[in-house]
Image (cartoon, rainbow, N blue to C red; front, side, top):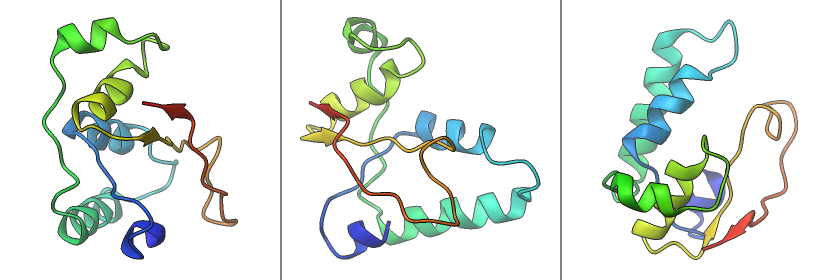
Length: 104
């Protein structure tokens, strides 16, 4: 988010992405901390929340079924690039080099 704050890119997410972030939070993270982070993200980037892509669009995506909603959201919001982060690629202990995972 610090790169988005520096206007290096414009973040986009859907409610489904936010819900997934909440469900997949690391063990031991308090619900209040998750809520605070989500509220801060939405306050800092009010234009980032986009409408959920229609199921028909999600069905057309050539991706892992668990990732289709992210790719469809990127297409719907006319993103140039999709760079998802997961607990496998991102930790709080070390920075992660941003990369464009899929060209949209």
